Image 1 (cartoon, rainbow, N blue to C red):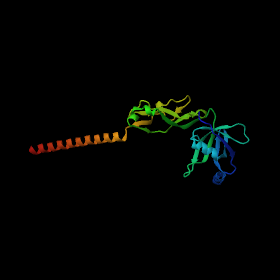
Image 2: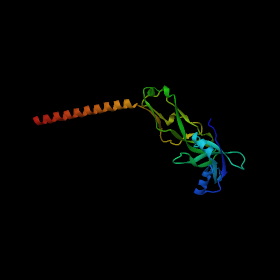
Image 3: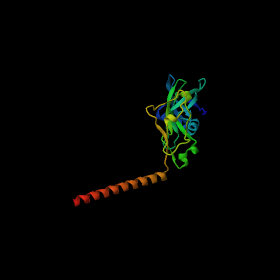
Image 4: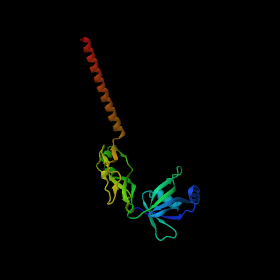
Length: 225
């Protein structure tokens, strides 16, 4: 089961760009707490706690809790918007949404492939071409899948893995429902693709030469007549 992060947060008195910069200088990450039938509140979170969750891949689409001074208990929340520093690559602003067991969210759940050593296509030198590294689903906020495992056992070169291969937990549905979209394929190795392309090119050249020879023969017959 995935670890649940607990963020200590405080109300942020100063808002706007100046307030956000002041919070960052003091080793906080500014943010907003909203949802749950309450008014939005400007908050600040401990930088080390936010960066730990982010580096471990748990900040987005993972249920967390916040510890608010003066309030009893810890509130379940989920990060709905995370702004990343363009150079440092770390969170600089986080919007948290209050949730409960009735809250349903659209989230991107990462995919993981298993039994790659049992795929004949990969053994032959094929390549696992991942089309989607995550799949969007609607899920209860308190029961978001951590990862979807997809089995490549028995797959040959040219085979594909589609959305229908995912075993969705109860209460979880795909966001995309109008097609059985592709998640990954077993692509031919580059050497084999090159050989196939050369063969196709040679075949095309042969057909072209045959057509040219036929045209020349027809032209000669026309002259004789």
